[in-house]
Image (cartoon, rainbow, N blue to C red; front, side, top):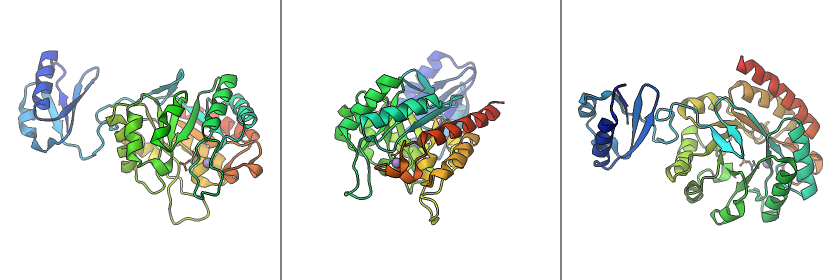
Length: 334
Ligand code: PEP
Ligand code: MN
């Protein structure tokens, strides 16, 4: 439920109302805008008498909202959230390209890819250290050593890094990681989300393979409800009956999530399509749909990649993609 206060509402009136609402067991989220103050009520609002509230002098309007996500809801937070990562701003009018291999394979590999994608315009380096693989017999990632190699690549290039966490007990290993990724398979690992919520680390939260947008936003809510509001949403394709592509990229999720939530939305066309040659058109489409950024898998030798070679573009292809995406962004900025 939200209450929009009249422009002249005084601090004393707002404090009194807040205390009254808190006395009814509700948490209150205040959003002070230039003209209006909005009170977001979190908790069981079924006991609140809407008419009584609306009858108060300082209240302009009261609206019950059906969405169960509150902190992630744009209704409570009309302005875009801009997540700060090592001096970069993600969200709002900013646009970032996150690029790098599916998995960190060696220090030389990650450093060489980092240097080339940086020159092409990528601002954040990705690379999996702990890999969620469907088969236990597949390469599982270099684990903690992979994070060390990423940090070395960061030192050499100055690029902040993003890498995936799978286990709540690993949080200390991610201390120096700039953005912690929660992958599709862990989107509803609620204990992990709650624990990540107690940190202030930016979290890149990927949509689950078979999860709808509301479930994605509820997972963001878990992180935010524990105190961490630095959440970036990532659309990475969902499972459908289609078999020609690895997943189906739900591009309508970009404008829809931006309407529902103030959190930044990035798109990963690599995992969505599973085919390297589809990455360019879908990256351009994602930029045109209004994404705040892209996450693209880039490998120096895709044929011999230890993971996801088929969907990895080469550094040269990434350079082309980045150039075309910049052109789309120029059009978007007009
Ligand atoms: C990844 O980004 O490396 C990854 C495993 O992606 P997803 O969780 O979207 O499958
Ligand atoms: Mn991958």
